[in-house]
Every structure is written in structure tokens, then in C-alpha cells.
Length: 407
Image 1 (cartoon, helix red, strand yellow):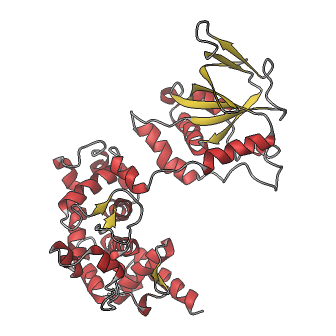
Image 2 (cartoon, helix red, strand yellow; image 1 turned 90 degrees about the vertical axis):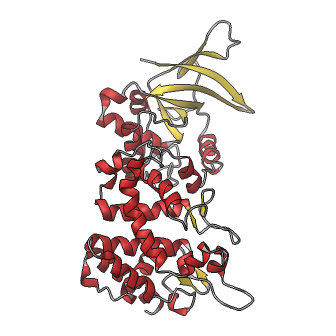
Image 3 (tube, helix red, strand yellow; image 1 turned 30 degrees about the horizontal axis):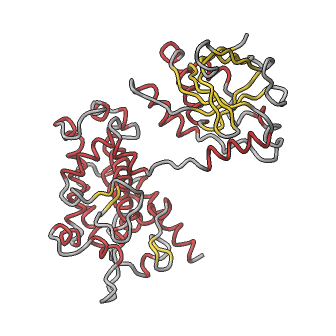
């Protein structure tokens, strides 16, 4: 039985395509994800070039599926699907598909009939497709008739199909994480972050909402992406691993950041940032406009004074990571321990940071570096590894980092 889709027919240069929509149920039935071994022959055979990178199942299940299931206004951009006959030969009109134009629209609008023996390859949108399939499995009654826009392309040759895949993926330029967060109005963590950006004086007007890193002369002290990531770590410590499912957080979906309800969560984060900022005296100079943020990062060339590690993304995230470990294991008296860690460290760029937060004279923002830096804070502050599993994990990260440069 053929699948029938209302479509608009189009053409860009030499590429024909159809624009339409498919139900989630149809996506589940007709779309084969790139990891499916049936695609091996199309993309060169098993052991040769794979159809695409492996699916990030964690991202699908923990981020995209909840987005679909929990958001009444969820929306996906169009999937790009290539129609591929099961035989692997070029798509043939009249056998594999028929386009039935609607009278009066110059053969542009009509019904696309696709034989059910034809498979659909998601040249762009494999994670969205996987999320649709999983969301349908979890809540079929609600999701079956939901629709997603699609761009449908005909299969001509293996080389052409691979070129479509390359074009769609190489030319895609997602916006920066910070810009994405600045437009986000649903995620409670982002909503709380926007409140913190107003309530914490150091952050007010000094958070970059455009890029994932700070330009050399940027007047900002942190990017929004870094601040959100820090809050994710801290909220997990405050509310547990499933913090997004906590009533305090769930109640903030699509709430204005200025709403009084946001303060029930933001006040707990603000308390942590107040301890951090008050125990790094240089931030007070920023608040009094006595120094430019770039000087804290890069130092003063005229005097040869180096910059400070705390002023970089790795510094912010490491501090949040160390604070989270202390909050988790000392929920009632973490502030004194955190203050001691912050003041015990020599934050100036120098050899003490080599292999931890710096490689040579360059600050190196990596996941292992963040954990090693957090471990360094705890160690310098006299917090032993015996203080809890998270503290021990950060001590271990520091040891591994140091061993890598001094085997």
C-alpha cells in the first residue's frame, strides 16, 4: 500500500525535491536511521564508510525526547529524507513513486504517492527522527498523529546520496550555545540563569549572550553558555541528579525570569555566587570599574603582570564543580569550606597551573581540565578525598592530570 503525502514540488538548480509533512507514526514506519545495517551497501559496505556518526542516544533520550513529550509548543525544523528503493537502484517514477498534480497549480502542488517498498534515509535530522520514534513508543496515543515538516529528495546514485548528506551537514552552521540560550523561554535552568544575570551585580550587564567564548577585548566576565553549564552542575548538587523533574524547577517552565516564583531557586544559586565573588577580590575591582575584564584574563602587558585563571571559562566551571561537591556532601556548612578553597589558591597564571588548567602559557578549557582544576581547589583548600565520592573523584582527576605531565 502506497503512502500518500500532500506536497509542493520544487527544484534548486539540478536538484528536485518535494515539501510536505509526515506524521510521527509514518516516520516510525518508513524512516530507517543511518545506524541501521541496511544502509551499509548504500554507503560503501560494512567495514567501509558508515552512513553517519553513531546516534548519541543519551542526547536523544535525556534532551530531545523530553522536549517533545513535555512541551505543548515543541517544534522541529524539517527533516531531509531521501527516498531509496529497497533494490538500491535509482528511484523510478511510476514504479517507486507517482506525483499526482492538483489541477490549477501548474503541476507544483499535488499528492506524492510512495510505494511502501521504498525506504527513507534521514540525510539531515537523524537525532530528531530517533526522538520522534522513541516519543511515539512512549506515548503513542498522543504522538501518533503529530506531524513534522519534511523535505523529500529522490535517490539517484550512491555518490549523489552521499553528496546530499555532505551538503546538508557540512553547510549547517548552528547558532552559538549562548545565542540559543538567550532566546530560550522554556528551560527552567535558563530561566533561572536569566534571573541570576540580573540579581548578581557582577553578572548584570556583563554576560555575553552572543558567543561561546569571550573575545580578547570583551567587557563581559562570562558567557551565557558557561553560566548555564555552571548552574546545571550546581542544581544537580542542590536538588539531585533528576533536578529537572523536581517540582521547584518544573514549575518554572515558560515563567518570566522576573516572576517571584523563580527566586525560590535562584536565591540558592545567588548565595553560592556571592560566596565565590566575595572571596576573589579582583571581582570587586570590576564592580568599581577600576579594571577591565580583559586585564583579569590577559594581564597587563606594560607591567608584565599575568592574568588570572578564575576569569576564564575553565575557572568559572571548575569553581562551580568544586562548589557542587562541597554542597552535596556538606549541605549545611559548605560556604566556609568554599571560601577557604578560593582564597588558598594562587589564581595568577603560572607554572602551578601547568597540566591542570594551562598548557604552556595558554589556558586550556577542557572537560578533564575543569575537573582537575576543581580538584586543585579542593586540595589547596585542605578538603581531603575522604570527604565524599564527588570530592574523591575530583582529587583523582587532579592526580591523573599531574601524572600525565610527570609520568
